[in-house]
Length: 72
View 1 (tube, rainbow, N blue to C red):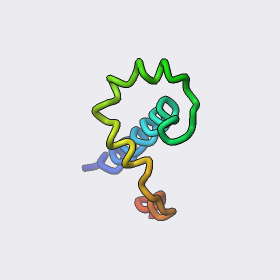
View 2 (tube, rainbow, N blue to C red):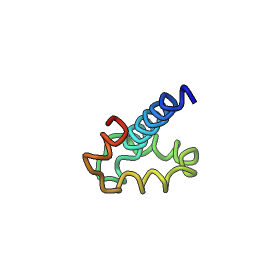
View 3 (tube, one colour):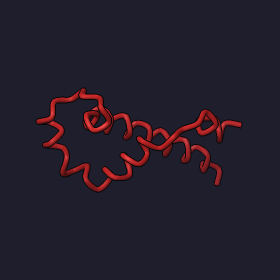
View 4 (cartoon, rainbow, N blue to C red):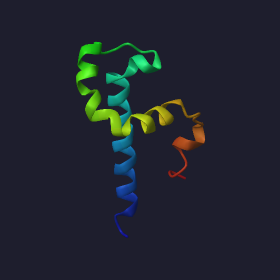
């Protein structure tokens, strides 16, 4: 229990980096063509299991209190 808060922070950071990678590689879905589609299509089979979750998180409405919810 002494490292629970640290584990939560690492988990959040992992999710943020994963979202950034997905946005960089598959940004054309969100309207940001950053990566050539050839490489995106080569990576697509590895991303399929997490693709729907990523899209749901990307299009979810965010509030400023979501960022500071655990820092208070």
